[in-house]
Amino acid sequence: MLSGNSVEAYIRDINKLYQFAIACKEGLAPDKFTLGDLREFITWVSELGMVPSTQSRIISGVKAFYKCLLLDDVISTDPSELLEVPKIQRKLPDTLSIEDINALIGAIDLSKPEGGRNKAMLEVMYSCGLRVSELTELRLSNLSLDKDDEFIKVTGKGNKQRLVPIGRQAIKALTIWIEQLRVHVSVQKGEEDIVFLNRRGRRLTRVYVFLMIKELAQVIGLKQKISPHTFRHSFATHLVEGGADLRAVQEMLGHESITTTEIYTHLDKEFLMSTIIAHHPRS
Image 1 (cartoon, rainbow, N blue to C red):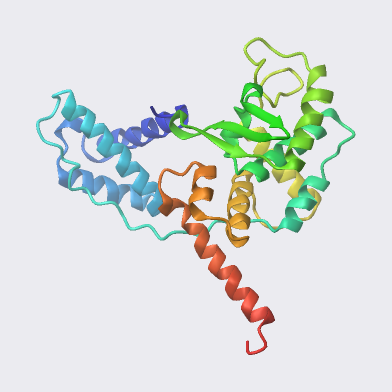
Image 2 (cartoon, rainbow, N blue to C red):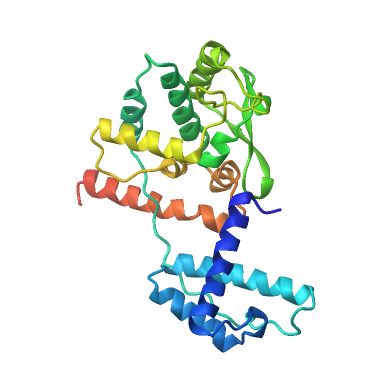
């Protein structure tokens, strides 16, 4: 089952195919498209300035669309079957140092109730490697913060659930938020089980989390462009640098394939190389 965000992305991608049909094919219906038409569409998308990763996602959406038409007997042959996906150069993710993470968390104004909440959010994101949507949808009923059972249950992409260990600093910040601050929030109906709420008792948006992190970066004078996902990348990178098993990191991140997680081994190699250059007497 696809998440709401994935469905929206597929709709946007198919809408681009519709726009191309109107602009370049005199309104030709998609079920009349040939492989040549689809190749022209990908060229058109490329000329709009879209990067290979975006083109690849669009092609994936188009292929899924034609597969549905085929299953519904709208078409007898799939014109997208031989449509090639552009090669994608894997970009190493941006990460934060432990010092930068400490500085960001230390810059939070704890004199305000939302300060305790924001600190708990950053601690949980870094401690558990959560996506921002997983953070904003985190539920009280999925927290297990007992001393002998320190885990949280996370609902990730495709509604797949996983258990992730949570560190002591994150537990401490979470406990302060839940037991001392959240209890004073007038919770709206339907939001009773959501961990992180705004002052009106509703769950936070992903945009809020992004803007909060951006504001903290400005406070500490951090020039690096960061987002909530930077904390997830930092979580994985610091684990791999510390010698964590790649399969364990894969499980904690909720990656479907180990190849997605393997990008962090490239960061690890860079870290090792820089360490050798800095400290080895023959370097």
